[in-house]
Image (cartoon, rainbow, N blue to C red; front, side, top):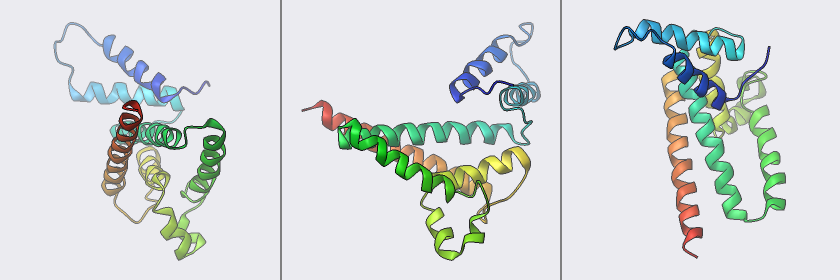
Length: 168
């Protein structure tokens, strides 16, 4: 089965909604939810328990990591320095996110450091949305709220830095 990117999921969702029954002017929420579940299951091969949480978490992750990458690139202004830095940051963020094992297994210091990473919150939301697992002690809505706040802050930082560079 082929895996699609997040952009492909958005295009797929638009296609599914465009192909909806045209006899009705408003699609009931139940059919939108069913279409969303089908689109995600065809894309990722897993039927999510909470499809809307999946969509919001993936959209927040795309916004966060795109904005942070653009911000680091604008701050460093050189590709040679940015690439090793981003790879060097990505590995600890992933290992310490709880995707491989709960961060509580690694001790209090690692668990506290994990809270600095947006990946920690994304793993908490996505594991709950797909499998119903609570892997973080925080409620899922807190994890999702933190992701949205980080996405907004990252976008503001990026736009501010890019605007500053454009005036020079």
